[in-house]
Length: 384
Ligand SMILES: *[C@@H]1O[C@H](CO)[C@@H](O)[C@H](O)[C@H]1NC(C)=O
Ligand SMILES: *[C@@H]1O[C@H](CO)[C@@H](O)[C@H](O)[C@H]1NC(C)=O
Ligand SMILES: *[C@@H]1O[C@H](CO)[C@@H](O)[C@H](O)[C@H]1NC(C)=O
Ligand SMILES: *[C@@H]1O[C@H](CO)[C@@H](O)[C@H](O)[C@H]1NC(C)=O
Image (cartoon, rainbow, N blue to C red; front, side, top):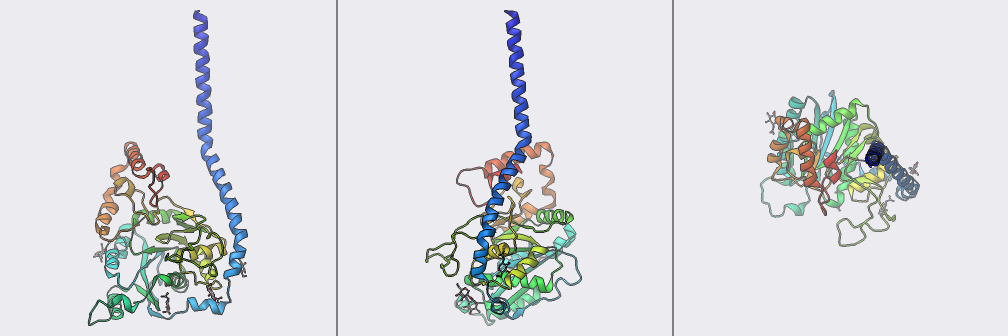
């Protein structure tokens, strides 16, 4: 009786130990398994894209002289010397509209303050606001002695940070603004290590972003295009949508992968490739981030997901989120408060240590892992 009991215990013990062993082996291999499954999927879809793209490419390739019409608008405001003789880590373009003066001022005195970035982070970031001509209709209720264009010139005298080309600043001209950014960098600031394009209503966590880019730069990264990735999005075929794209403009059932236009970063080698792609593509497709995807697939660059680029979503307010956030979309009124709360130098120390990390994982899981919670950071961001 006693012997069987002991044997039983021994048996159970062996069982328990082997279960543990199997479990730990699975856990050890999980990451590898996970990445190999993911990369397999990626390569399959990438191949699909490449094969599909020669068709897309052919349908959108036009002669150089004609492609030039999308990018050779004269500059009305420009700063040719902006980057000269400086080691620029990041050239940051903010897509703005003439009437968004308050948004620009908010950015200038918060995350886009070049002097503050230089002093507190020790790197050179150049922030430029990119715009077109004021559309007359947008200003009809105003009765200024100054016209809207004169106001912009005045603002530019004060801050020296607007670049403007001679096309109407409208939603349907957004792709012209995209071309303007890549052409400007090519001409004036090709030595910047990274280019970022951002909406004027996003919040950029500059200290986190700078640290990330410095790490990337130290690793000598190339082929980097990072943001919130949209995969296999289909074109909108409903005429009432502002994203409507007719078949003769884009006939294929899905767009190439692209990053949400709210904010993404490319390394300088990618910026150069995109510039060259724009020289032979028909840029009449007005959705700028989709067009960026088309250019990128023409030169064989694919986007990389970063869980803390928010895309169109707004990040939850919490210190644990601020620790890792890169961008968050939809901030206008709260930008000053968020800047104070999120980018204050003392912020990080509060959540260091094992206990801090466990606490933050729990908080982030509660904030991000909810059903029907899409758009901002995904659930897996809670565990990264
Ligand atoms: C796109 O088309 C151009 C001109 O036809 C060609 O030079 C280029 O190699 C094509 N790119 C891809 C990825 O098929
Ligand atoms: C930018 O930061 C500098 C240094 O911290 C500060 O003196 C300046 O007032 C700031 N600019 C704006 C527009 O807030
Ligand atoms: C885009 O800008 C051009 C040049 O100013 C203008 O002719 C055209 O009407 C604009 N397109 C839209 C859709 O606003
Ligand atoms: C570019 O695409 C537009 C929309 O499909 C088309 O109307 C236009 O003719 C194309 N441009 C060239 C130069 O082929």
